[in-house]
Length: 267
Ligand SMILES: NC(=O)c1ccc[n+]([C@@H]2O[C@H](COP(=O)([O-])OP(=O)(O)OC[C@H]3O[C@@H](n4cnc5c(N)ncnc54)[C@H](O)[C@@H]3O)[C@@H](O)[C@H]2O)c1
Image (cartoon, rainbow, N blue to C red):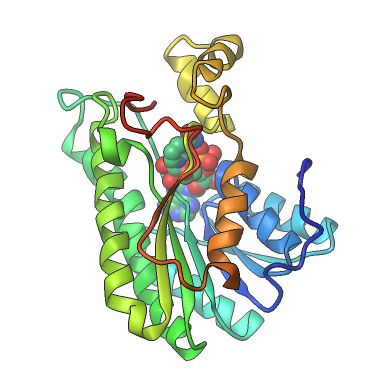
């Protein structure tokens, strides 16, 4: 990953699970966490993606292990946490980044599609958090980051189930922050804005939008560009580090200002 502005070390002593770390934002978060000194569990469903991220971390001198994980599956989620504890001795951080965002309006949303989106985007973070909390209590505290979306505020007609799932995740985050504060477990939401991951490029292409179109659309954002995985990763490192030890229940919008009042939603 190029363009990093820190020399590393902000997460020394931390053990972090990043779900969906085989691509896009999750991969960026996992790589930056390792660069900052964390031991990282790459919890990813795709073997190719998960192995690639773990290899990139190792090639940069970091500590990362790929644990094939389907966050929607109870046993698989529990296994990711068990692997963090058995391989690295503890668990102090969890980034729920795995998510899917197929386009569909309410009329196009079948029950099967609704269930599929909710299973990954909402049940997945629930299962990961439920498994992680006892391990974080044992570590004396921890930090949970739920990767939500500005769609949680605005809704979006052709992301009907997706935006609903992210709204649920936002409320789950508030609930966790209230319920777990006494355990010194913090929970915060991170809204990545509009990140041009490979999957997002494919989704935009299916809507007839090429890279030039995306770049022009980016220029119309308040801060003048679309976002990168590294933009989100910087905020994730802050929220996972002791620098944010008094921060819980917040929503961090890494979105070029699109969620400011009056800016009118997002893709
Ligand atoms: N890209 C954006 O503009 C954007 C904007 C706001 C929010 N987000 C959110 O950020 C997260 C990452 O987005 P992205 O664009 O990097 O996505 P991506 O598709 O590039 O990467 C998602 C990763 O999650 C993995 N995954 C999917 N289902 C899984 C499961 N059940 N268990 C484990 N891993 C699974 C995929 O294999 C993939 O590697 C998602 O939660 C998404 O909703 C993205």
